[in-house]
Image 1 (cartoon, one colour):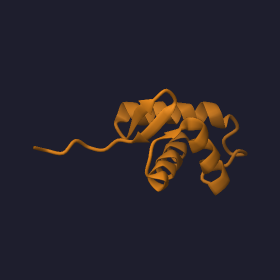
Image 2 (tube, rainbow, N blue to C red):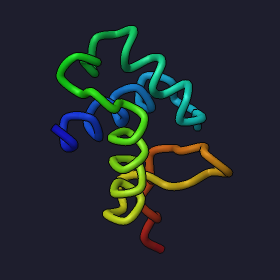
Image 3 (cartoon, rainbow, N blue to C red):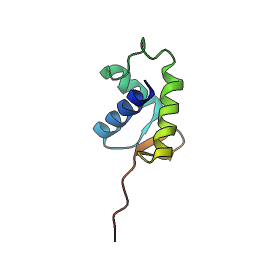
Image 4 (tube, helix red, strand yellow):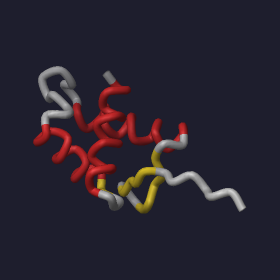
Length: 77
């Protein structure tokens, strides 16, 4: 389930094309049906954990307090 939540967050961020606060990511993921609140009882906790894991693994980057964006790989010189 947490992988699905991270995938949902990445999809939302990809569609937005800009950094978003986690509350906006949560709202958009719930509204789009990417996260099912009945299958994910504590959406806030699971989403925040998935976002932190995404930062640790390099797929996401923290762009501010509670704000996340898709990590862009550094261009090779």
